[in-house]
Image 1: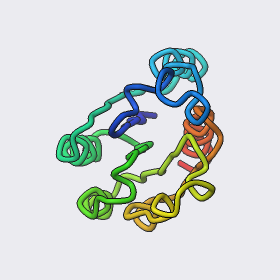
Image 2 (image 1 turned 180 degrees about the vertical axis):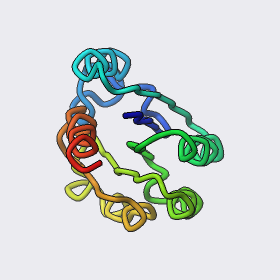
Image 3 (image 1 turned 45 degrees about the vertical axis):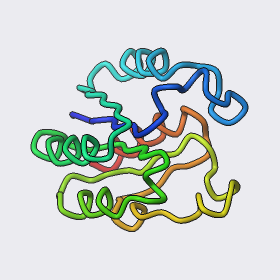
Length: 140
């Protein structure tokens, strides 16, 4: 199984950015643990602060991945184009958020990608990604 994890803007700062919300573990450290725990899964990881690069990666990943885990960060609430990219591919996408976006500011309750995704996991810290991996294992 091949899974691509795509992280959007500011998620390169996980571990140092607002640790009360996002935790103190870096994503790179978490990703290494994830790869060890799921040795049979071929993971690809991509992070960008640029909307168009995220769209390009979604489109490219649809050609050779069994699933995509997407944390679009702030673009979740603003990017119709990322939602359109998800709708244009057949590869299932699971939307992931580290924090519980429904319990945060009102603007975070709006998502332009949720309706296009196979499912959404939110509020479990970095374990949200692990839950997404488990979902792909059990549902593909």
